[in-house]
Image 1 (cartoon, helix red, strand yellow):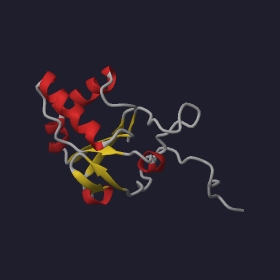
Image 2 (image 1 turned 45 degrees about the vertical axis):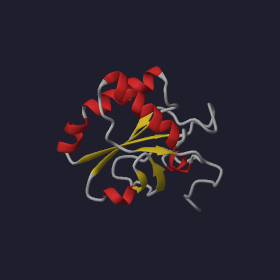
Image 3 (image 1 turned 180 degrees about the vertical axis):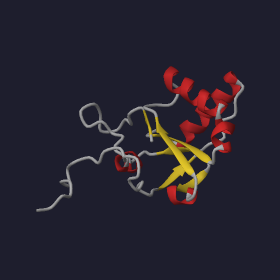
Image 4 (image 1 turned 60 degrees about the vertical axis):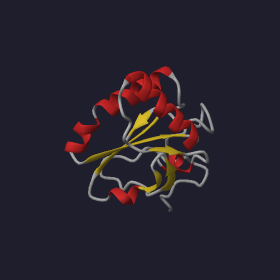
Length: 135
């Protein structure tokens, strides 16, 4: 009897002590891999869309607390299905209007491959929008 999930089943969000799936993705800071951060804690958080009020508030707060995460050897990484160009425009907008620098990478997951690896696409709600989550 196989314990593997059927191919059509979306993986869930990894649990504590589960190995995190590696990825290779375009971001606002160039190509990144999860394995680039080996030995660090990583806070990977997703948001449904750039330029939305709630997502902007979340990014501002993460950016304000970036030094606290860094002091704990934790790397922040944002994720959504928007493009790098959209992410950069949004980050500039945040920096202008909220006077806070977004110094962490934001992944452009246009093909949803990273989000799918982490179970961040809610199958009943959308096939393309990442859910709001942190792991």
